[in-house]
Every structure is written in C-alpha cells, then in structure tokens.
Image (cartoon, rainbow, N blue to C red; front, side, top):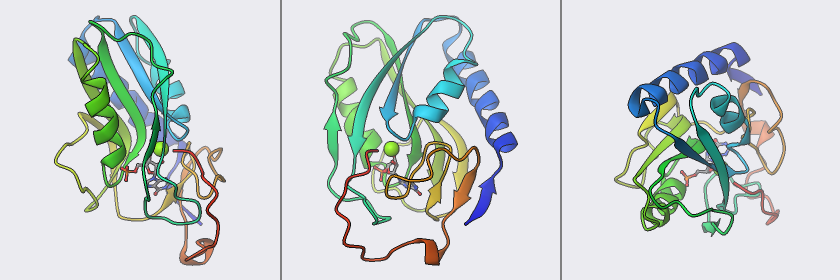
Length: 184
Ligand code: IMP
Ligand code: MG
C-alpha cells in the first residue's frame, strides 16, 4: 500500500471544495445529502467548513463489491431522507467511478421537488465513467487505481486512514470468494 494523497493535501482539497460550494450557493441554506458509508469522512470535514445554514441527511448505497474492485449490482436505501421540497440539495459521495451510484441517487432526488440538486465528490477516477453525467464539484482527479482511506474501504477495511492510499496488486484478493457486502 502506498500514499496517493496525504492528509494535508486532502484537507486543502476540502478547503477548496467548501469555498467553491459557498461561491456557487452564496448564503443560501443548503441540504447536504451524504452517501453512506464512504462519504462520512468527507461529509464531516466539508460541513464544518461550510459557513451559513446547512442541514445534513444521509442515504445508503452499495454496489456489492466485497473483495472485488469493480462494482456489481447497485442497492440503494433512500428512506432516511426528509422532505426536500424547495431545498437546495448537494449530494456528496467519496468517489465517482462508473458514476452509476451518483446517477441513480440524483435521478431519485430530482423527483422530490427540490429547488436545486447538485453533486460533489472528493475523487473522480480517470477513464472509468459509464454515464453521461458529471459531478458539479470534484476534489481530485485520480488515476484508475483502487484506493482506500479517508472513508473509502476495501472489503470493509481501511476507512479510518487519515490519508488516501493505493492498494498494490498483492493487497487485492482477486476473484475472492467473499460475497460479504461492504456498504458504499
Ligand atoms: P460507482 O457507482 O461505480 O461510481 O461507484 C461509486 C462507489 O464505489 C463509491 O461510492 C465507492 O463506495 C465505491 N468505489 C469506487 N471506486 C473505489 C475505490 O477505488 N476504492 C474504494 N471504493 C470505491
Ligand atoms: Mg460509496
């Protein structure tokens, strides 16, 4: 495992994202919707830098990765959402990979009468998108490597690392038998 982004670099990225978000929304009240589980670290760092009124809500997504590094079937649970009528909603996730998670959640959020719906990701993986949409705010573009830390996991582990690390080939169990779900 080796470091791709240090804790200091991530912190600068969140500062920049928070500035960009406030520039886009002004003093407007904002409803941040985080995607469990991977976005918990970025969401908690981001909302503390967003001056002005912020509400927080969470949804849950999982693409049944287990020990696979490519996504499988997408499972969503949006039942924790409050009424979003008239609100400015910012969907926040850890990483934009195929883009299918964000695309599916955005499609649902757009049907809930919000005043606006935009999206923010900490990371975007190069050359992997399978959808036409792009996130409105992106912290870092990274190469097509499987990364862990700062909320992101491999088979449930490593979310707690304060930096972002790349798993090397021998860290990854290819074709592993684990079907255990590691949410979002
Ligand atoms: P997408 O639907 O393919 O864009 O996948 C998005 C989700 O897959 C993210 O929210 C992550 O949970 C997970 N994911 C994608 N790439 C990585 C990675 O490199 N490390 C850890 N999780 C990842
Ligand atoms: Mg996730």
